Image 1 (cartoon, helix red, strand yellow):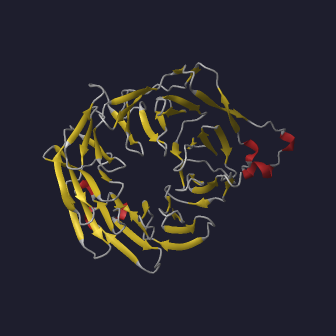
Image 2 (tube, rainbow, N blue to C red):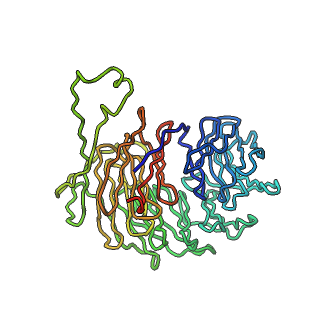
Image 3 (tube, rainbow, N blue to C red):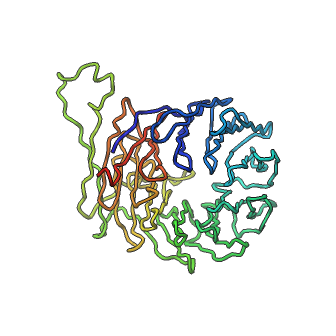
Length: 448
């Protein structure tokens, strides 16, 4: 593993272009575009205010920068740096901004979810979509970019509108059997739309492209329901994480429950490997420590850590949530399938220091990673079954079938990894600190 030097960023705004060639970062009101291999600065753009959201177009030719407080969106061109576009929503305000899949239209959601404005970069035309619903995930594009599903709320009822992205005409409009719709998500093959209710009612609805209700699934009643949802890349499985600390997997043939994964406080499964992070602080004689070393914040006082395989049974660290407060820290907040559909990673909020990996072929627990601090973020390698995670310290952690590894980021100063994501080719990781970024390069098979 190799690491780059550290670069500045603001608001965790750092994105690799879809073609994998460029790295864009925002530093307050500046947009910096680098070559992803050499990290040389290729373009520097100056926005009108501090950037709140940044996004690449699908063809990697344009970058959108949104300044929500001022109701502004600026678009920059990589091929023609002198060209630029400014969209001002005016007094109606701006809540969110995103590209359409063709990379030539911008969808702006106004304050109070009054409407979605569709701006065309090609002919400067403007379209309006009324009644978008204010919810967790109210808008989703199909993977092929042909359709957009939008949750709507009118006359105290929930509806779904399906638009064709080529010309934004309405393909289907139907009422959903939800009390308070919370999210919509297309299956990766674009054949099925998953729609789920708010956490007050456990209800998952599956619709076809023409608006037919294919199936309804409800695991239980009268208790907090769905907390997280994820499709497997093959569209064969739908993972549903809920407040009862279980993940239920639905199959794509009957849409019935295939298996239910529990997250017990005591792990007894003999087929699972429990990797426990163990810290050890270096012992240093005080007479050898200079003031210069202390002020540098060097690796002198940094804790080293490694993984040990714990012998069963293993007690998992459990934090008792305050159930009287809103959004209690309990239940499955994150569910993610590996790129080959073979593994599923889950995080249970009242076991914040543990990450669970399940084998989807064997339908059982494969591994548990017990960290010394709460897991902040975890992501699968887009090319192979390899998982990267961070816990808000100066280390990055990797799990694969070969085992677990803990790697210290050798950056100067106090670089703590708050979140991370993979480059599309799986050869490098982008590590995000509070106001810095660092690239971590994996050893390729040829180098090994």
